[in-house]
Amino acid sequence: MPHASASAGKSGPPSDLWQLYFPVPTIQGEPAQADDDAHPGRITLYERLSRWVATSAVFAVLRPEDALAQDFALNANISHLQQGEGAPFRRSEPLTGAYSCHEVLDALALAVHVQLLDICTPPPDPRHLRARLRSRRLHIRVFSMSPLTPIRSLKADKIGCLVSVRGSVIRVAPLRPFVTSMTFLCPRCQATSIFPLSDGRYEQPPGCPASGCRAKQLVPDRRYSATRDWQKVKIQEAPGGSNEYEADNSSYGRVPRQMDVELSEGLIDCCVPGDVLEVVGIVKSMETIADGSSGRFAPSTNKPRCMFLLYIDAISVRNTRASQRSQGSMANSSTGSQAGLGGFGPSPPAGLPPSAQGDTGLGLSMMQLHAIRDIASSENLFELLVSSVCPSIFGHEVVKAGLLLGMVGGRPRTGEPGERTPVGKRSDVHVLVVGDPGMGKSQMLTAVAALAPRGVYVCGNTTSSSGLTVTVVKDPVTGDFALEAGALVMGDQGCCCIDEFDKMSTNEHQALLEAMEQQSISIAKAGIVCSLSARTAVLAAANPVGGHYNRAKTVAENLKLPPNLLSRFDLLFVLLDRQERHRTAPTL
Image 1 (tube, rainbow, N blue to C red):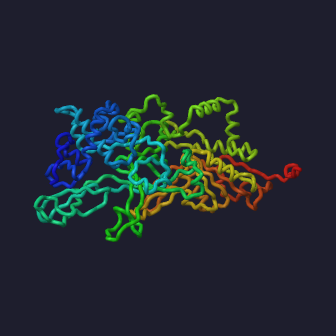
Image 2: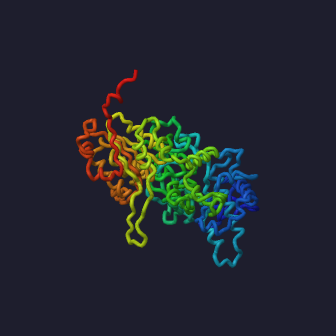
């Protein structure tokens, strides 16, 4: 058995706690020891962080009850972890230094864990705080990292770095058990040993760790393996984002970048396809082979693997769509909310109104705030907003006003209180613009999609029904079926601009019926039966049959659209290209 270091014997943490954060192979029945040889420098890191935790004002109000109430997850602002002598992430050092980010966070959680045990109520303890704290390990959820890193910038140089990214969820995989340690039985000496599995990768132990036993082949006992909940989601660069990095013209016309994010324990089930996540995590790599299998799901082979896949191991997740739905109310720590902005604990930030606790992230200056206040107090506010919609197109004020109202939406109304089955009424306004070619319909839709906080622009002649709603795809790595969001789900609580609406087929038109009226999309495929939110305002533009609008016919006859689909549009505008001499005569 490895010897315990001298420093660990003097000021090191208890051996059972050290095993929770920095596991080493152990024999069942023997006490685990902190081995400085197996973990070079980690004890020194722990001692440094222990002194910082004892002197930091961030932990002055932290109590054992707070950790238990938040399910052993403590939210920490990254700026507070960079202050003071011996801080975990020093401002003068990069986030990747002599120690990996995981080592720093684990050592910090261990130091906080030991401090909480020191301030627990001495026995007799009727609430059993000490026993409950020693049963599980703590997790440090870091948030409020700035600036956000573009997903397209996650390359090989970011491996091992702590980054913060934002993207739209396009795929959510089902939950799986993630093996953290495996129990092995020695057939020679009958010793039971426990081996940790790094990142869930199964590796056969080199031999029996018992002293005097030279057995090389151990039998795995999967009944006593330690597991945790694990889930993988795929995020994509948010279309039409409001951040400065998303508005960069260098990404215009390119395929949106995607990135896999792995969630574990309290972060699982925090999102559905279409949500917008702000993820703080560590960039890692996983080897892959030619058939597409990778890492822990790849078959065992002796062939060299020179190709790797990048993914993000999430530390904290904030669902910005959930923040909007709760109107700034604080969510629990399992969803990666911003509880404890002042350091650790469940208290909200002081001096911040509830309306500012949602998905702001605008970074407005005082001059811009004063300009917004002046615009809000102006008399002709609505006319000013209408004029700001696609100013490159002259006129069409009524059409612009309708598109503006469709982008803003109405007030959601639910059923009357006391009803057994309350039926809500949709608040989104659907707008259809019909007109002759060359009237600026596509330009106005493009401008509205870029102006809306959640805007998706698609063209009807290149869109399928699955691309509009939801499709079921098979994960090439795990083999599971997962939901992949379409345009209407991606534009939830926003607007979906559909150009060339008349070029869509009948199947695509039928796929819009439920989403436009019920504000949801139901799916029953591959054993998956669910309903996803699609609270999206559909802003569509169509050309009449024959190329020009015939005023002798009705709107339905000019469009040849199904009556049930046409009735779902609340506003319908007709743009005519009048052939008048004084309008079309050249100017000399």
